[in-house]
Image (cartoon, rainbow, N blue to C red; front, top):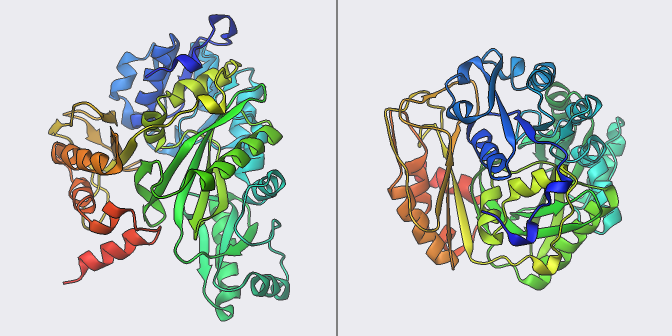
Length: 463
């Protein structure tokens, strides 16, 4: 998918070979974008991924370590060595792994290579939740009530902050993400234990015990705003997504646009996100995440990378976001303005995971047969095939089914049919669970919040 608004100029090319420092469906997706731009690719793998299909179509394919992610996809030195051996001039981190690691981005820069993402300084600013909140307040982006400073060590001062915010509050790790390093505190008597536990979790998981505190909203939705920025101060936002369908803080279904939010409410927030990007000199694609309750937005964090759910924005905006991300890293100027961004129709994405649809325990094994949906307005992003072995070493995501239609109701019906046409044999998947969710009446009307899916699952499990 290519937009005439985002056409690139060959004279601006700064690199022509990209190392893809990731695996699975996103490695396949990035490789496709590179091919469409005429770029050569280097695929890397762990020992568990030696038979990955995208390795066969890349210009170079290297094994960089054992199956453990810590010794392969998270091994900065191995990735940089692979780039040097193959002559790659740029590194695309995809999502997860090293995609939001400012130290890795800096190491790439110091090696004389291009990191396809924001520069390390912007990443460090927005990757730390406290500094990100300060930057958002300065740009006029609405934030969740709570101070923009780390919690002090003095227990009495922590208690005073909680009283000023008002219970319930939520304690979060400054360097956290992905639903980890956070704890809800409903009343004062539970505060000190919650702070101590979260500090230790943060220290172990993120290397820093720094915490911050915010008001815990009771029934919010999870709304995202996608931004695209070049390195010349130009930036646009590409509409919004609803990612409220979550289980244990992990997204299951995403859609664009978020239903029921008036343009006059979302418009100023999108403009503030663009202003924030311009103030910190942000480059590439990024996502501002908000809680939305009672027609008010509250910033929670910015993801300084490509999102798993970027396809729903691609289908509604008509832009290839991965290509635009690569062009921004090449130094190519945006030639679109905000007025040029015209989002149309409605899109859903379902994450297909290799897991039991009832217990959600991971499922490993060999896929014996596979049938994926096809047709107008249906897209499947995946790397799997018949004979593919699902490994126990990595995230259970194996495919994404995405649909697009003129209205939300039509998109829901198209997704129902797409899921009915999806069959993956040999392992367990969450497809039966997704089929049931798309028959739910409350989800169909958009009357849900971030807690709804957990409650729905509990209700289904009752005898």
